Length: 127
Image (cartoon, rainbow, N blue to C red; front, side):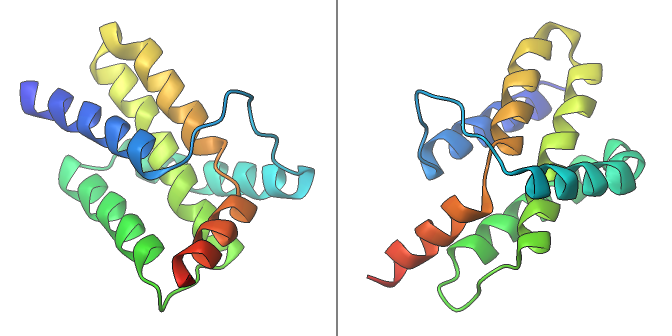
């Protein structure tokens, strides 16, 4: 159980390191929010039942694909990864009630990721 908590904190820190953080909350477009909601509703039950092994695979697949200069994710693929990772925070909040605030912040940060920021990241990667 301690290893799971350490891994969650590691993932949270990796997210903060690997992505730019802004002092103001980013707003996603209405279309993107609808896409996120659709993905959330269709994957919620599956993701809440993920084992840590399944979550690890999803998490590392996302970062490998995000950082692969030869791959550009579609908007749906991008949000499929970020929403599923955010949804897993709900599971961690249930498993570790004393970490609910951290899990909620982590979920909020993953849901605030925008496809436009991802495309900017990919453009800067080519330089």
